[in-house]
Image (cartoon, rainbow, N blue to C red; front, side, top):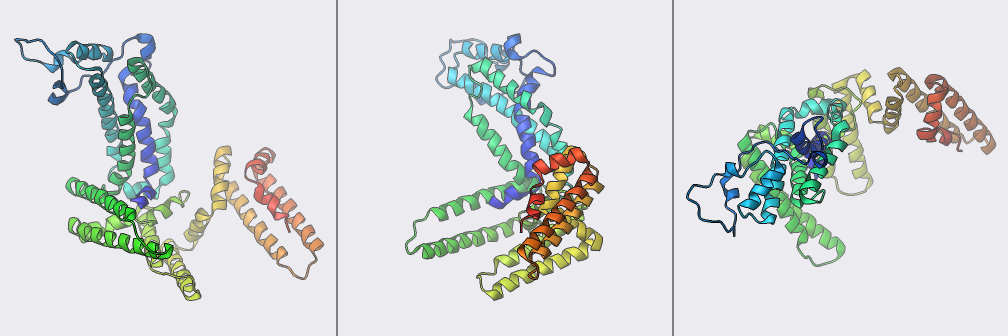
Length: 421
């Protein structure tokens, strides 16, 4: 589903999977080993190969008196393994398929090993997105080298750095499924499988509905297509209700809602798992109710505003006065931008808060000055120049001259805007 990509965990899982792609090859050599091109020997761990892999179509073999044993073909060295495959008459394309499949299988297994400890922690990670990002960032340092190791392996074996489109498909599928698996980690394995199949059926049905040729004006076609998609979703929803209990269905819909995306916007606010869930529920309820409001008239606009006010009142009641103020700050893109800058320069949190409050006060004062109809244009311009100068001096004192210089260059465009009439 389109909304599934909004899951809190997807970013982190995707990074883990990308790391694991190259790690699968890196594991072949071990830390500090000689690269394949230098050593001339490319090793692989012993693996159990399905019997059907030994049944190579079209292979010409001599009559033998002893039974064929796959272990006699396998080798811990990839180059020896390939030579053995050639020795039994295996075609080159099949050899490529077997070797690439082996790498892909190891990659998929390692991906599952990385992801497994994260299952069942959806709301824990949702409540602390910065913490989970830090956890995944630990893998970044080795990523570039791991990718090179994988490319070097295939370059040595096949004289091309990325010979397998199927490998890319495996990675793409695991990326897509990682978010889905995180979303469904509260379900038993059988139900997870059933819901994943249901999601595929729904995606296919929606795609088919969008491909249908319809007649009429553009607006008529739009309405027909919307009605068809609604019908498809309603039919699918009825089936989902047969797969899940009411409690499971409620949890699934919450995790699949836009409410979980709202939590990521508050990455710099510390929330408990319960608060993260409750916040997602409030925002999901508001979004669902707003979706039922059609039109641009004043009454509809007023209804949307009322829904927003109700949601904010519920959030304020849940968090309390002090933490609600923190919530509003965390939602503010101005604060997020400033906090990111402070992180890079390792400025204290109290400095970040002081600069943020100085910006709010300056912008509010500038707004009042611009709206003062009793002042002339020259008077307003002079007053705004003073506001800008005093604000710059305040922030320079808070940050220090060096940090302020960087701030002006990378995040200080709003300071210049203060002086504009």
